[in-house]
Image (cartoon, rainbow, N blue to C red; front, top):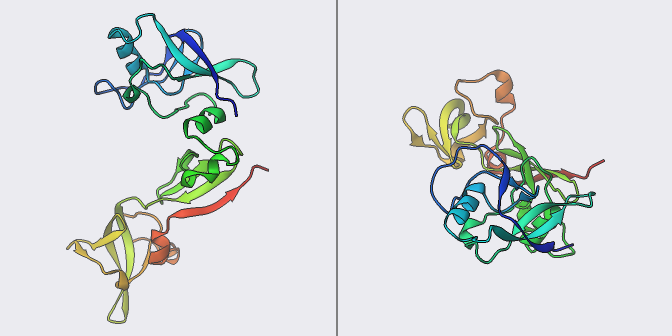
Length: 234
């Protein structure tokens, strides 16, 4: 993998996103931008760049970067800031929006071994999230090998229907779930794990239908987190 071409480029934003930003320098979240030379800056928000320029960090109006090419295009399009005049806290993790994720930059930034794919390191943390549903199911994508993944994350807090077994009698009740723990509604007393038979897959705000009860799952499956499946692109 290439490590980019070191160069000094114009520290001047041309196209800027329009998200509302609060706080002060160094901004943890901000607007991404493309420079006047049409380089997409992957690790510096516009608000932090403006602060650097307004406060004399970059007196010559230039900034040192590593330039990377677009995939399958013989033209530099990405800029990764390495200028020693820029405080480390002003930089952020590589971020790609409205532009294709650059595999070389991700591998370099996270020091991925040459013999590893992005989906083989850091417990899938380098994958791109393409969607998440109400059940806490994340759909992830590896931008290097184009494999899709489904990951079960922690369920969302909220009201669930829970089937309990108490004194050999099974009943459905409403319970508030937070961080995997359940409290019975309305008294909000803790429900013992041993009394839980099943929990609805999705959050609900009523007693539910017979079909929903039939689709309920055991407690261990409800709390399960981890890889469900992966599939390479056909």
